[in-house]
Image 1: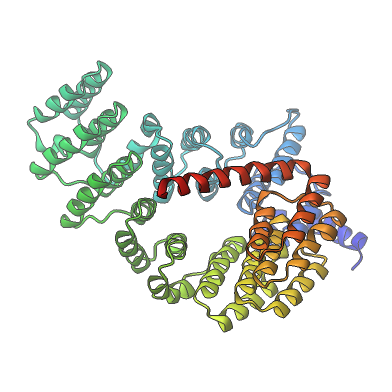
Image 2: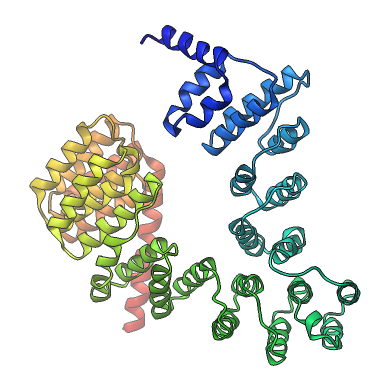
Length: 512
């Protein structure tokens, strides 16, 4: 079918048959067909427009959704251009009410905390029913960015999903507690809480949340933990939502010891924090070098179907840097069996890390089998780090014939754009194989021909090996060539060289 015939066909479909029923039957790969037909079709039916907007928004084609909304505005004789931030506000004002699922997705697609909260208030006004994972996301974002005051916008709504409304007595106590925080009296707020005679009111999550929120707002983290101990002594049970909130607030403010105690208390009362709390805990353990705890957390997340691959990647990277190959060996199987990401780029990153592990552990067969798979499976633009790894590996193995063959293959592939990092790796690999003339040739020919400017790292890849091999003539000629063609790089290297020489002299005098 020609393009003209296709356009006519699309036009007839959308003019002669109800578009609404068609949209829901199209698969995700057929969005181009809908768009082609849409460009020939205009209608003022709000339900149809809402379906179209939902369709493209769900597919992440926000730019096309905005074009559609602008078209609808013109039909309604409301001119003006939209930004992404205005998208839902404008859409709702035109009576194009989004579905619940789209409202939930909108929160995930928002670009910053303020936009997220504004969207929440707007969509809530349309009686949107939010899923728990949306509340969890907003909790993580607000606490991570230390925007505790924004919790008022949504977290009480979240807590109310599973709790009764406050009675009048509880509302009175809540007002008194809020007033003491306004008056900058956090200790008095706790005292007011302790004076409440009704255990039902004391244990209400909204009352407890207000105390913690006020204490965190004043950066009174020690006092907040003391308050946690007090309510625990009164046998007040911490709900899942409150527990998640406390753990994340303390974690993002570097109070790991409190988090561990709170989690222990929650588990003893048969309330287990959500996976995202343990994911953040794993990240903190890794950042602090608490590897045993990180390993334990990764195993737990795996058992609970949590997101653990990113932490597993960080763990093996840690072992590679410290050259703890025995520890690395026991995690290879886990890395191989880790659930693949739905995103191609993330999957490629995971495979690149596994490729590095195979190289470090000298698993030659697995290394080349995975590299062949990666070349067949991923776009060349995603293989940048993998290319450097392969070149480095061949340099360490000393297989000069394989190294040159692989480099020639890479250079001859028009889809691959080799960058300076790749050339740095190749020069270093050639020097490891004692191919100094070939390494210098890259400077003299390739860099000039392809207009590539070498950097400090490029010179550090070749000059020290030349000096170690006593190749003074090659070194002298090469530095002279660099000075003539790339004076800035030469100057940077000279400054680095002088610093290194001074450092060696200081060490010599110290031990002398």
